[in-house]
Image (spheres, rainbow, N blue to C red):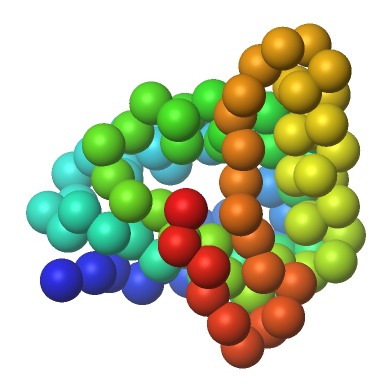
Length: 106
């Protein structure tokens, strides 16, 4: 069984701080479902620090997280952080979909 989580219900349309992402991941631990679809619909901005923290925490979680409906801007921020990680020898990664109607499991 999987759970779908609409991120804009928790964050509005912008996600700014590491602590907000950290608190969100603490809440995810309480979900009984092992697979969680994170719907980025209506999220139009994620700060670099949020993307970095998200990738680090995603790597550590036992949950299977699937991102969907990422805007081009949000997807670009995650790709930027991935590139910075790769250049630093860090291997955190995100598979996201710019296509608003498809889901890619991570």
